[in-house]
Image (cartoon, rainbow, N blue to C red; front, side, top):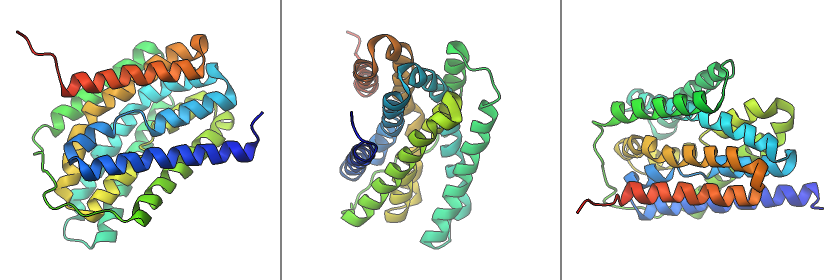
Length: 266
């Protein structure tokens, strides 16, 4: 039996490693790839995994269904962040970050609150998530893809702070799951745990256009997280948390591969 202290350490270490990996991808690849990968099941997957370990596979499976619907709140977050960037232009770095982040968090909270009153099942979860992603993709389609031409090596302290932020959010979500129930545990898991610090660090280090490029590609990348949540929601109870997580990651990875390298017609 793993002690509570050791379990907490494991959650923190896993969370930090995952966030650092995403930071390296954003720095070494380009904002477009970072936007797509930011939709990969990272923070949400870690939260659902540990929720399952602590509260049982059935609880986590039910939460995953609400996480799927909660992707509409994730889309609202990037929309709010995008709007915030417009009002933040011309400000100093720290005030501009606050002006960008706060509308995003407010948009996420509003949509999550609205979803908490809706009946969520397999059909409604898929309909809500897919509709929000399609509308966002259409709304963001005119944003140009801007590459980072002169890359700045991110300091370890900055990367660590970002990872620590994500770890704290994951700890809060998984610790509160039993108290708030599967509905809010799932909606909280849809919070952009790794995406928020990614956008903040790119905005602080580079230019707003690079953040816009990431946001433009987020709806496409969220398809992998939607697939992941649906797979674990349907497999956790039958296959268990470990195999369900593995199957979810395989399906999510396959989606991203097909997204980037679609089969060509002969």
